[in-house]
Every structure is written in C-alpha cells, then in structure tokens.
Image (tube, rainbow, N blue to C red; front, side, top):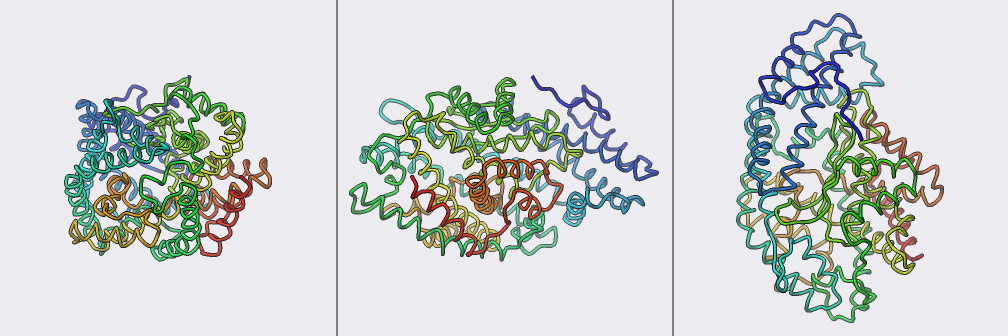
Length: 566
C-alpha cells in the first residue's frame, strides 16, 4: 500500500475549505525571509500546500468523471472550482511577486530553478484580477461537455451501448452491420449538435475575453504564453502541419487504396476504416477490465521489473477505473496524485485492441508520475505536454515487443503491431487538423457556428478527411470536431501529441537498435520532470525536438520499413 507523503508544514488532517486554507496563504505572504536558505524553505512550504490542493482537486475530478450523473460529486467539484480556486489565484500571484521581489531571488541556483522561475515570471505577466471570475466560469462550463457526452448511448438489437462500446461493431466483417452502427453513433451525436455548439460558443466568448483582458489580440496568442511554449511558435505549428500533409498524408492515402482493394470495394466509406482487411474478426487481446490490468502489469514487467511494479502498486491501491458504462465520462486519462506520488488511470474499455493501446499509453504517463514523485518542488513535476505525451506515446511503441502477453497467436501479434504502426502515422494528420482548427477558431473569434463547420471541412479535406468518401454525410463530417474533448476542455492541448509522436518514433527507433540503452535514456529523460527545457529533455532521451519536413520523412521511412517487416 502507498500513502501520502508526510507533511512538514500544513496540518496532516487539513480540511480543504477556504477557512482553513487562508491562514496558510497569509503566513506565506507575510513571512519574513532573511536568507537564501529561508527562501528555499518557503518554496518547499508553498509547494506542500499546492500539492495538497492539487490532490484534493484530482479526487473531485476523478469521482465526478467516474459518475457524471451523481449530483453530489458534481457539486463537490464545482465547490472547488467556484469557492477555492478563485480565492487561491490572487494569493498565488502575491506569492509569485514575493518570490521575484526577494533580495535573495538572484542567489537561487539558476541551474536548478531556471525553468521554474521562467514560468513564475510568465505567470506574473499574464495575471489579471478581472480574469479570475471568468476562468472560474470557464472551469464550470467546460465540464458540461462531460455530462452531455457521458449520457450518450445507442440501441443495437435489443441492447443499449455507450458510444465507446458501440464502436466495437465498426470492426465487424459485416459491412451492413458496420454501416448501421456508424449511422446510429453519428446520428446520436448530431442530436446533441446544437447543444454542443451553444456550449462551445459560450466558452469561445469567455476565452477571448480572458485574452483581451491580458492584453492579447486573440486567445491563441494568449494560450501560447499561458502554456509556457518557450520552445516554439505558432509558425512552427504551421510548419508541422505542412510537413505532415507533405510526408504522411501520401503514405496513408496509399494505405487507403490498399484497404479498398483488400475489401473489394469501389469506395471506402467512414464505416469501412476500422475493419481488418484480412477478413478476420476484430482482435480481442483480453476479455475484461481486470484481465486488461493483469496483462498490462505482466507486459510492463517483461520490459523492465520497475515498470511492472508501478502498475502492480496501482492495482493494489485501487487506482484504476477501466470499464465503460453509462453515466461515465468519455475518454481516458492518467491523473497524478501530487501528495501520494502515484496516479489514477481512467478509461472506457470495451475489450478492444484500442483499449490495449490506451492502457499502455496511460501506463506510460503513470510511470512518468512515479519517476517524478520525489522531485523537490511540486512545480518540478508539472511537465509540459510535449514531454508528458512523449512518456505515453513512447510506451505504446516500446511495449509492442511484449504484446505476446495479449496475443497467443503469432499472426494476431503481427497484425496488432502492424495496426499500431499504421495508427502512429494516422495520429499525425488528425493532430494537424485539430491544431490548425483551433488556430482558426481563436484567431477568428467572432465566427458563427456555420462558419466553424465550413472551416473544419476546409482544414480536414487536405489531410485526407479520414481517407473515406463522405458523400451524403457532410453534416456528420462537419461536426466531427465535437468528438474531440480537448477542444472543449483543454484548448490548444493537441499539437503536443504530434510533436511527442515524432519523438516517440525516434525513441522506438533507438530502442530497436539498442533496447537497454534506449530504455535507460527514456527513463532518465522522464526523471527530469520539468527541471530542464523541452529540448534538453528530448536530448536526454537520445532524440531531437524537431518537426521539419526532412525529420518527419526520416521517421516516416523508419515506420514504413517496420510495417513492411510485418
């Protein structure tokens, strides 16, 4: 069993409510600091308080997403968002000002604190008192997406399925069955189209107001600063989009032609894109959530005993919720518990191959959480997504050589590996589309919902539009963006998947050449947390933070060669 770290500043039994928190914040604001040692001690005390708050919020979020129909759990989450966060925000800003104004600030070890202090200075630049109530409203409003999506289900035959469960039928070898299910899922989503459009329009207006208040022309430019994107610019993102369109889309278009021929079809439709072209039934690597967890532990253990032990610890401490059910929020995540030093994995398993890859993905995040648990300050663990997703996406690929735990049959194992490698390439255009779409949304803040749908289509088409024929299905195609939780809840968090996917391919390339060395470099990079720049972390992993067309081509050629071997 694992337990929270022993507290040295805040009370062990601290109840998380403003009446008990405010005296602690006042103490930190008013404390006299008479040496650099006292300043570092102050940083540790602040870190302990913030870690306690983060873990409390984490459990409120986890419990709410596990049961979106429970009003008490929703109220508990909203209490934190509306009563605690708005009151801590001004104090956090005061603490940042106190730190930077300290006469001992310049005596802090720049090698140790450079990245952290850079972020503090940026937070001070962006802070506006008038944005606190707006950000509170955004926090509450965006959670409505979970409630809407979590309530969606369809009937197939005489049984009700969540949309995640129903998607399993899209792998059925019966084309008529696939079409029937695809249409039911799509039409069910379209029934909520206006509700989701209204929700997003409200969020868009609020986010734009935050940007204007902070002195920016648009929310895109604000978010690049707020996310601490010190290592690249919007122009670099556009260069990434172009590289993917140039180097990856033609490969996937070729795969689509091969799929059409193998399925003996004149035209590929959206319901033809997930069925296996061999004519064999969908891969079934496990039969229950419990089996998924057990096999994942064994898979990780076979890579490295430390990795397997991390998932075993999570299982022993009930830190998984993997089964899909009605009322549960969609998607999957790994949520770090800042004081406990372990994470919680949430997902919606329907016993599919995709669930296997989701588990190893979230398992990579989980390992990252454990590796950074003992870093000195809580902020040192706050990795940018470009690093966090490198941890998870690399694990998807590294783990493949041990997927025999899931597949007894050699042909099924080869098929799973091939599907995964193709999916790696398929990820890149989708990332480019979602990212470019968000650039358009927020640099055109006054657009109408109809214009947004047109913009999505205009952006989606050059990247292959899923490489299917959407004739007669334009409304469904134009609203595909509404499936993407990130657009509603975590704006601009998506390009990171693309950069990290390139990094993960490079890690896997190294792993195929020298498994022991590559794994150690990967773990060494993750242990850094966010104590180094993104480029330095990637270099520690033995790879480049690079998204040029030439680099994309080099990595794509490697994946093509690996697919050919299977």
